[in-house]
Image (cartoon, rainbow, N blue to C red; front, side, top):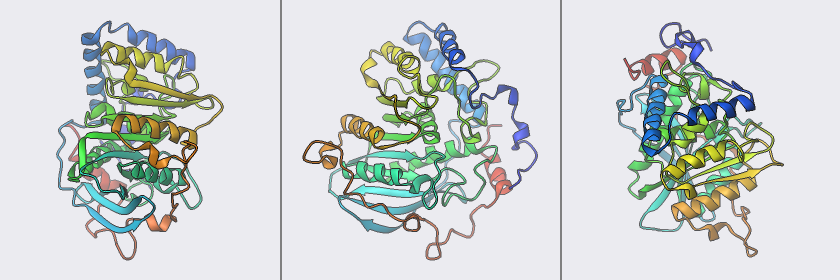
Length: 386
């Protein structure tokens, strides 16, 4: 696909303000944190910096925190019942004619209310399975549902059923941020959801979506960004760093401080030894923990570091997330333990990709859907901050 020229094109972005990929060496990233830490010395001065960072994100996105919200018009169909959970295919409109697509996992057990979890995916590819339909995504959503949470797994733009524009759209970061906020709105429309107990998790690009939404929206009560929070790496895709959210003419920051905007809400950082999170125990985690300490809540942030593992959301990482969510969202960890007290996902049915599709011949996408990069850009222009 080609991108339109004009104010919504890649050329409209001041590229001198972009921080992308391995923008720093590991040493430079750590040194930058030292520089940032000198800008505050107590909770009041950190809150001033936090507001500056948050304002910088909104400014970089070109959006206002109070952007207009239109009816979601949810579509929910094809309910399947499995061992302890159900799965439905879901779409709703984050903007008129622009659809967020995904799957809604619900616990089978009846409760008066349920916590909820947003589950974002990254750029992991497979042959049949990709994005939200990958096996590890299905497993973590099903497990969390069996534990007692309503879980919504949703597509990144340009992935799965969300193919109304290319994933490399120059405004992908703004589009995905709008989609994440509206996904949270969607969970709020479900009467059975306990609005005070909503969490979010994702790995890689899904980790970016997790800490970014948590930074911008305090309705996320618990977050688990996986293999992504780094002092020297800023995300390798336009959907993570294609807009100047880390730097303006008034400030500069990194994903470490953006993740720290979760404070004092519970957050678990999961890191590994074979990607850009290899230094988390010595660099990123202590920095964030110091910010939590300013609130008197240092115990609310944790780190699980797996030095012999790589860039994924594998079983050991999922186990850490399950335990953290169980503790902070009051879920039943026992629902996914075997007799030996080990995490056991054998109850999960991994569905074929076609089962999880939202739009198909029986359930076609509405004809008024906006289609193509140019049309999506024009739609987004009405949301951009003037």
